Length: 238
Image (cartoon, rainbow, N blue to C red; front, side):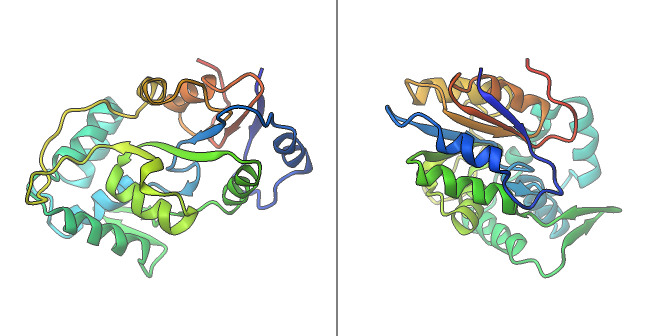
């Protein structure tokens, strides 16, 4: 079985046990790590925060933040897909602009409709974990339900992960770079594993996630690998 490590939000230093486990990872074959992004490598959620700011700026109409919260409670996958579909008609440059605005936001949170959303920042401990994995020769991939545009921008800034290694929710666009509704596989829950199986011949050696849906990803880890769990609830395999 893969080595399992729960990571608590208060931790700021990698334990000796984790360092030793990373150093003992096998060195042969095509080795890679696959991580969830929001509330795993990041403290906060880039996809949700960008959508909230789009709503706050009235760039999304007819659907508010509370509408999104209500939909999440009943159908997370539908909610995650819808907030991307609602961007249809926006120039791609506007999504990029708002993403950069979120990252550079001067306050620690964004207020909207009585709610406060934490501005996403890198998890220092997990950033250190990525450094150790890179030193072992692992390539880092991100598999996230957040829109691929925002995910690529924030991952490049905080983790130096190239756009090619970000598997996010597709943001379809036309020849004029105007966002449109697209239909493709969605990297959420079992969908993350489905996409990895099509892209790679082997399982990831290291995985990490925080939500019930990420358990599918963690259970897909190689037996000789490592699973990182950053969820608030106790981990139970699927």
